[in-house]
Image 1: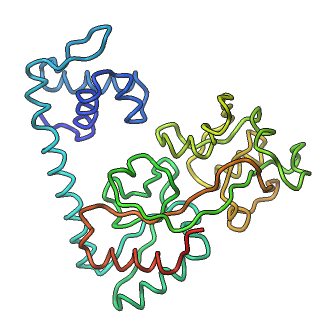
Image 2 (image 1 turned 135 degrees about the vertical axis):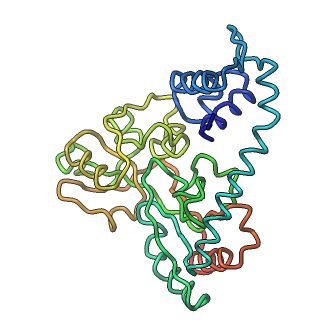
Image 3 (image 1 turned 60 degrees about the vertical axis):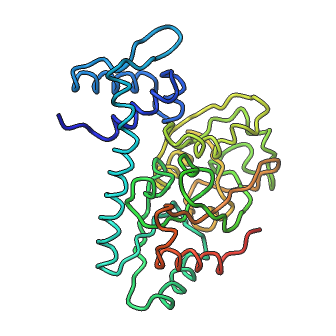
Length: 298
């Protein structure tokens, strides 16, 4: 049978973690969805891969045989996919650059211009990703390099260099009772509903909810969005407030939405990321150098 590599990744996570709960948390998927995927894999193969008990999931003999092979299979496929796409980019003299929202803010255009000077005949193709893909396409080999907001799920498997940081602010409906303040303390927002990124974005979503900066106070989610336009619409419509980088006030204006500085919350960090396989890729490394020389960590 043909097996989706996603099913193999899910299988590997359960095999390594030993429980559906921990594997689901690691994969940023719901436990019922993960259970369904594992059963789908078992049905397709016609074997039981796990012995289930109250204490967790134990590999069966067929499961152990598959678990020994899966890491190499996945690594081989990911390497082939990345090399194939990279070869196509080299042939076209195009560097695929993933980014989220405002990328590197005002530094983005100088970075692209510097890259054009370093690599005559090459073009940096900017590809915007949805917030449901906080690696900006890098994790799936859809791009060669990415301008990202930290932290994001899977960044430990990539090379990441922080470029700069900026304060976070809050975006509110213009009619909100707190909108008249010059500065808002984060504690005053704890009971507000928030417009959030999709749950599968894991630590990236948690960062923009400042979940670990609430002294255990629970988060209220009023709406979930994946794109800046939908995000602004949800805020303007009164579904919730949202933390944002300070630069959002310059790049994302909308009637009915105001931005205010927020006290007592950590800043947002911007970085450039690439795959370890491209450590020796001179074009990717030229782009990274452009980023590092244009931006200053603050």
